[in-house]
Length: 366
Image (cartoon, rainbow, N blue to C red; front, side):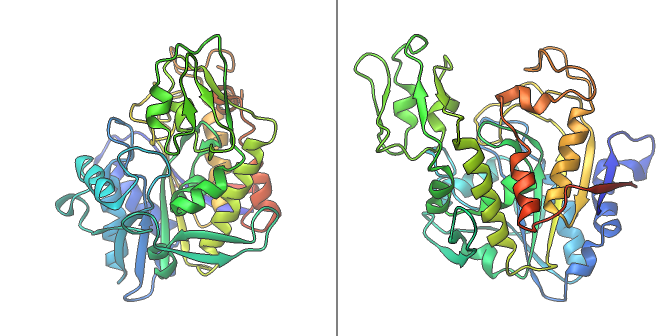
């Protein structure tokens, strides 16, 4: 049974502030034991797409940077470029987006290195030999780091159901070619009666796979399954065929996490921030209403356990009025499934199956 350390929201005195709890979790979870003097420590973040306002606050990251330095490590912040055409698809735009959101030296006291380089081509290919993939391709900076800390904003996700430690590490560090590999089964379709022919989907498609003669038509041969069109469609006329695509994508995302951790045995740690728990990923350039109230912060060395515990805590809450949760509103109801109608635990079942971690956990509240 894996240990997951937990600090709830709320404070009535100085040392109960959330930034203090981030530091306390670092020591309670034993992350200091993972760091050797002069280790290069990659802190994997999601800097947030410009327009999004619920990405993880840089002030929280600063607490982890300070703890890494306290134990002799050399921290840097990192993420890999996106597959879709947003403002983080190359290193220049990505760094500008991070700066816009406050990830600056004066705030975080650490440099930012985009893991897969200027245009997503700086990656390492690692053998995994698993069910879907023989090799995985992820950012070289993460591969060459001595330690990785995944600092994740836990929320829902349009294809994976949940966006936590697995999504942050596996999908997040995949190179652009790697992200395409993970999404390759996710081919969206257009519901013609809802489509208004506005062309927004075609504008955002990175592969020019959409034509708009009257209604949108997606060329399934050219489509790479990045999901950008279904996120951007203003009338929700584009949907993913869920017969196999979500399951395969989740499992491939797990295989990428396995590959990222392969040369980091006992050198990887995880934070999940259960704050501003939104219906969509921080990749979208907006923030939807939070589905449940803020809960707290979790820390563990087991990515499966921390995501399972995070999802369970979310589902134990009462849904926020006015959120996307209309049916499963009571404690114990599966609110995460309702948001995008996705079996979000497929990734955790598969991760446990291949030895990435355990779904059995014990919460230790600090």
